[in-house]
Image (cartoon, rainbow, N blue to C red; front, side):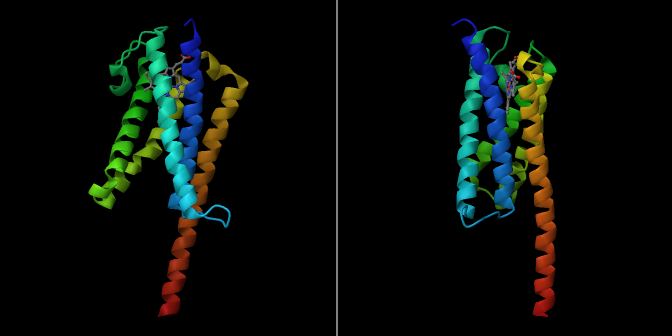
Amino acid sequence: MGQTAWFISRGTGLVSLILLTATVVLGVLTSGRFATSATPRFAVSALHRNISMLAVVFLVVHISTAILDGFVSLRWIDVVIPFIADYHPFWLGLGAVAIDLLLAVMVTSLLRARMPLKVWRGVHWLAYACWPIAVAHGLGIGGADSKLGWVITLNIVCVLSVAGISVWRANRTDADAEARARYRAEAR
Ligand code: HEM
């Protein structure tokens, strides 16, 4: 197999990061009730769900090829128990933390109908923590690719996308609160 699996692992790591970023952006758009005539709310929400599933598929490939390749010493347990790996224990541990958070979000989403909305939403907020931790894992582990100009640019674009959408969401909340206050004042 040569270095093929190692290259696939690094490539799918980067694709996972892009898909995870898109998932966060679409999730924020969904919670901010974004819609246009061309992209109704249900389409944004369906895209959020489908891209998150695609991210999981790429993560499975990223992780399993890293382990099966054998280029560095990694065990399956390192995937879920953080900071015990021989290879870059801290930065790989962040990857494991991101996976644990992602698993919690996935399991509660599958059981959503059977749990109080507040609990599901609380756990779903973990998805926001998962994203910066995954970014830190990818950058900090210092793979050969992380020094390439286009990989640095890709990381910057991901960070700016999430920062931009967070600013949009914060303003949107203010606008919503103002609209509600105006409505209440008019109803009096
Ligand atoms: C949400 C979870 C994760 C994301 C988004 C992610 C993404 C990434 C990214 C973007 C890179 C850098 C690729 C490069 O610059 O070449 C990377 C590297 C790496 N990841 Fe992950 N990863 C995640 C979780 C994990 C987990 C749980 C493991 C455990 C097996 C893992 C194993 C590795 C390894 C071994 C590298 C180093 C590659 C090298 O040294 O060149 N990742 N990951």
